[in-house]
Amino acid sequence: MNPQFKKGVLELIVLKSVLNKDMYGYELVEEVSKVIDVNEGTIYPLLKRLTNEHYFETYLKESTEGPPRKYYHVTATGILYQNQLEEEWNEFSKRVGDFLKEKKK
Amino acid sequence: MKKEEFLRILRKNLSVLEEGEIQDIVEEYEQHIDMKMKEGLTEEAAIKDFGDLQELTTGILEAYHVKADYKNEVKKNIDFGKVKEESKKATEKATDAIGKGAGALGKCTGFVCKKIGATGKWVRTGCKKLWQWITNPFTRLTETLRTNKEKVFGKGIFSKLWMFVLSVCGLIWRGTIWCVRFIWNVCWAFTGFCAGMGALASIFLFGTLIVLQNLNYPVLGIILFTVGFGLICGAITVFCFSILKRKKTTGNIENDTKNTHSKNDVETFQDEEERQNVHMKQRKSIWKKDMYEQDMQVEEMSAKLY
Image (cartoon, rainbow over all chains, first blue to last red):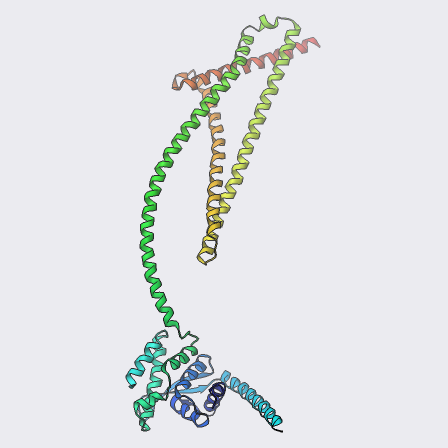
């Protein structure tokens, strides 16, 4: 898959994943990896950036195995941003799909 | 690559960030690797999944809006620091040399000022002597007129009228002298005031330009110009006001000489020239008195005539 495609949509997928359920880093990487094949290292900088821009907030939670885990939670601005991204994506994919269908004929 | 090494390099590459943030990121990656290993992957494989380490750190730093090639700039800064130290030493030496030079310059200026002062005094004495030389015949004439007025003018009405005309001329002459002196003083005061304002303005401009220069504006030339202009203005101000002061002090001396003269205390003057001056004043004041008496006489005469 073209890495440029992944890069743009990765933010939306991460936001959507955390929106339904608070997740910790590794869990999130696995969730995203189900959808797109992504370099695992790139998720963490993205999480960091989204936290710095106040779309995420973090808290520590004890785990049964190993050290406490850092969980990510979507903020109100994060929800708004996610909705906007989703709309944009739908519009974008619809247009691209329509264009491709039209050219097929 | 082992986990420890990976984390060490990661830590080093992120050294721009705060210690807390670095710890946060490193822990996240450490946990990730641990979990991967629990799933059965080897350390090497888990780390390989992260891809190129340099790209990874670049991505992380971008999240903080930090330039990834900051390291190079840090190196440059270190070099710059060395240069700064060297230049500091050089400036210290230079300031030392400048200090010595300024000391020598100060001595030189002192010497030159003394010479100028001496020349000024010489010029003043010269001018006074010239003025005395020019006015001497007139004073002598008035002297002779005063002492021998009856011989010169006779006792008739025409002679009295002649004296009246002369006294009017004297009055006009004194008035003109006073006006000229007043205008002269006003002119110097005005010039001095303007130059002083200029000097103040250039000081203000100098401060502003220094700040601009520190902000890397190319205003060095204008700064030098401002310094020069300020110095010139200051010099003009000092010159103008020194002339004014000179006039005033000579005025005071005149008053003093009059006072001391009235007390018959001429011996206090050591300077031959000043003594002469006092004599002149004495003569002048007597002459003035005489003129006044003459005026009175003329008035009386005219009153009798009508």
